[in-house]
Image (cartoon, rainbow, N blue to C red; front, side, top):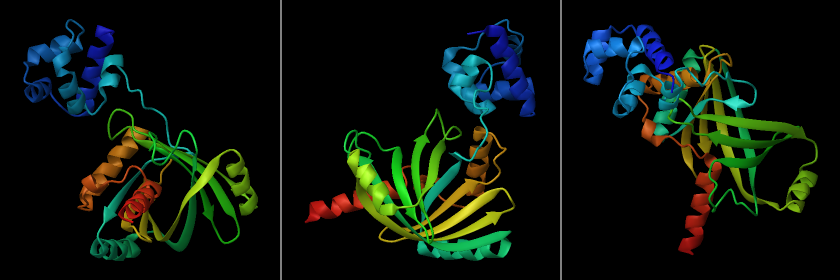
Length: 267
């Protein structure tokens, strides 16, 4: 650990937050003199304070240890920064009404997705629960997709990497997947209403057959770094008075698999 670098980093972040040394000191239960000693590189913060320092300055512990921000990757076509929440039917109706009247763009479509899993290691019913293979059936084409969620150290690190390509023959691609021991797990059908809100968020209100109602909020601006995009999402969730504890990190496919498994057990 580079003591001078970490101290300088703490000072920069404190100023970004608009905090005086005395204000940060009060948050951390130390003296202003201690903060000054950290920032000038004379002393190193006690390890027991690293969590509190990181939370106060809005960084990860790993970033504090390195003395620099580590999450600088920006969005791209293959990266999604989103939050998906389960909601009640009444919330679904209220949110639809609100975004229909305030959004710049609105589309509505029905989606039919087929999910697959390798025989080994399994995506469903095994140790893996953060990735999936999907074929989306559209009117004039089929989209083959692989998705994986990366959790990182905290909520500001979470992002999804999605790689997809168009395929022309549904039957043949299913046969190819089966040939390499990647088998169909379930179908998922949903009605999706999507809105572009202030050119910042893409809002999707989903009515998923056999699962219920959900809202998916994705950062639309691809120039925002991952950690900043996640913070925007968390703030927007609060503005909408939505319950973050209802967050679904696994995705619809895992919910559907669990529901099918539960139904099978009951039989």
